[in-house]
Image (tube, rainbow, N blue to C red):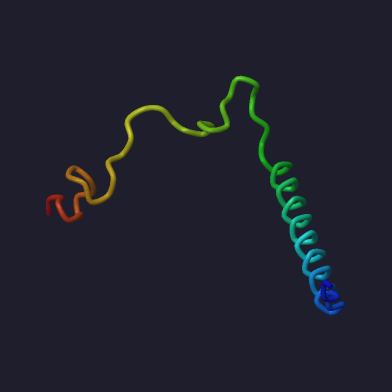
Length: 75
C-alpha cells in the first residue's frame, strides 16, 4: 500500500510552481518590452553585425604599437 502524500508538501509544491510561472511570465514580458525598445533594422541588415564599422581597428591595449604610455610603448 502506498503512503498518502502529505497535504502540506503538496501545497508547498503548488506554491513553488506558481512562483516559477510568475517569474517566467515576468521575464517574458521584460523580453517583449526590450524588443519593442530596439530600433527596427532594414530588410537587408543583419542584426548580428549591425553597428559594426568596417575599416582598420585600433590595436588592443598592452599590445606592441598600442598606447604610448603602455607597458611596451615609448616614453
